[in-house]
Length: 252
Ligand SMILES: C[S@@+](CC[C@H](N)C(=O)[O-])C[C@H]1O[C@@H](n2cnc3c(N)ncnc32)[C@H](O)[C@@H]1O
Image 1 (cartoon, helix red, strand yellow):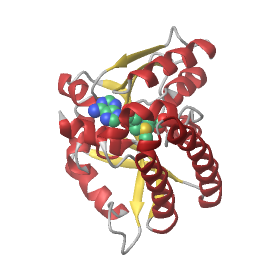
Image 2 (cartoon, rainbow, N blue to C red):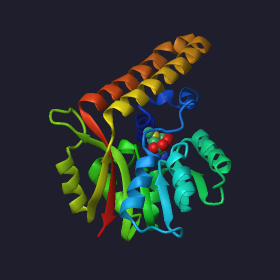
Image 3 (cartoon, protein in one colour):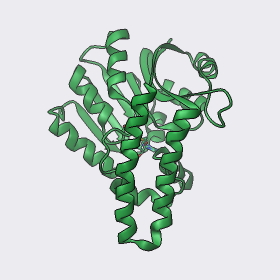
Image 4 (tube, rainbow, N blue to C red):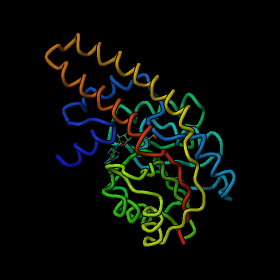
């Protein structure tokens, strides 16, 4: 359980589980929590023949941005799962506001438990959720278990640049995919300039909320400042050590 809490905090760039109760407040101004639904939609439109009857699973769905936007664009039925209850409530409201609540089911739960059920889907989304399902090899194995043969997977993650302290280079990703019966069909690399602009805006919003919390709970100021610092460090790693990528994979 403590490991799950640590991974939960880390998936939202926290360095300690102590930050978890404050995350809904700190991230209240953000709707996109890492992945790009527009890039996902472009890959689906260009490379797949998924129809309106497609069953989609969004693991670690956050506030539901990918689920809601793909349900709106393609009329897919999407089930989203996330461990943050407040995010699930926001996702339900967002689906309602977008007029797709009949297509979206959002569940408060653990992605690990969902993959253990091994119910196969036409399309699985795993957006910006890092180590939530273990290292990249374990993650690909678990994701493959919830895909139909010939089914699709979209992962939003990073390719590491030479010399990076963390992450996998593209050739290592491809080796792992091969091992798990998956092929990389297409990818969309992030546009560095617009990503940096977006991250800067997010950092400004998060910093403002962190300052509000620090004023309400002065003894916790170091915790909130550390959170802002880790957000800034992630932005720097994305600039220098990693390339953000949305990958489309097919199961053989
Ligand atoms: C960076 S966010 C990405 C959210 C979403 N996929 C998106 O791109 O907007 C990572 C998400 O993983 C969720 N998470 C972390 N551990 C989880 C777990 N064990 N089960 C389900 N969700 C989890 C967090 O609550 C958070 O919403």
